[in-house]
Structures are given as structure tokens and as C-alpha cells.
Amino acid sequence: MLCLGPVAEAYAQMPGQSHAFGNSLEEWMLKYWAWIFAGADPDTNGEKNVVFLPLPAGEQTDDDPPTFVGEAEVSLSVGDAFAVPLWFYGGFPEDDPDLFPDELFVDVVLELTLDGEVILDSEVDDLSEYLIGPAYYDEPVPFGSVEIAWIKGLGIVHHPLPPGEHTLHLFVYGEGFDTAFDNTWYITVSPH
Image 1: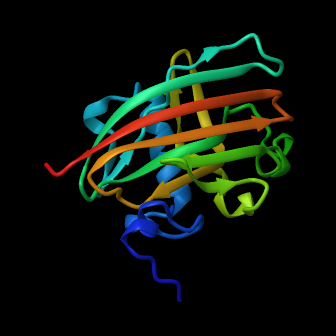
Image 2: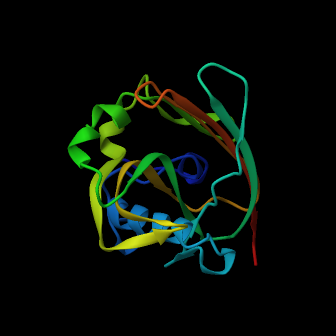
């Protein structure tokens, strides 16, 4: 059994395939993406003390590969955990999930840091523990003029953070999609 003190706990995400706060990682990511596809209303961004972090509005750089850089400011209350996708694909009803093998997701270059501490690193960690899908919606979810029938990818649910200012940073590059994301969330945790 691993026991984490208050400082270490602040930097530990939930184990990838745990049932944190009553749902599996797959269930949390299905809920997360349904929220995103519905417009990411900040008044409905989570449940059961798990907040969905919004995706930063990324701007494409001139880098090769194409890299999307974004930032978002987020406010959480003490006791709020958070869910965030790391690398995902939303499948259209006509898409064949077999064309998106696990390797497209688990073989990415990924580093996730919280307040400068590495909490997930593709060079060290087994990303298959954070892989979900393909996970299907009961009915396809509208997303603009299309519908999303299933999702597949990597995600986390993270323990609540202590009060104060925090910085979550994600860099991820997927060779199979030849795209990178460089996202930063500035998180303020307030007592009330």
C-alpha cells in the first residue's frame, strides 16, 4: 500500500484505471467529451466534485509538426478533483475504430507537469494505464454539423489540489497524427 502525504498527494493523479469519484476513467472521459461537444458550458462542467478542465483555445504555430499552443485560467474550490483529456480522437458513426490502434495513443511523446513537477511522462510511465476506448455513446452526440459516436484516447482524473495558485502543463506529440499540443492551465484553488 502506498500512502501519500499532503504534498505528494497534490501531485498525484488517480491511477489510470481506477474508479475515482464513482466513475471509471472511461465514464469520466465520455462525460467530459459530451460536455465539450455540447459547448463546454462552464456552469455544467462536471459532477461529484470532479471539474472538467476546459480545452485551451490553441493557436497553431509555424512549427513542424504543427503545434497548437493554448492557455486557460480555471478556478476550483477546495475538494474539487479535475478531469482532463491528454490525447483523444472522436469517432464519427462511419469511422472504423480498428483504424485507430492503441499505438496511435500510447506511443505519443507526452509530459504532464503540475507546478513544475512531472506527474506523467511517456518516457517513464505506461500510458496504456490511461487509455480508454473505443468507448461508445448510447446515441451519437451532436458536435456542430456532425455527430460523434465514440471516443478513444488518454485522460486523467486528478486528486483535489491544495488552496493557492497552480500551473498544469501538457505537451503531447502524436506521430500518427503528426500534431502536437502545448497547453497550460492556470488553476486557482480557493477555500470557498
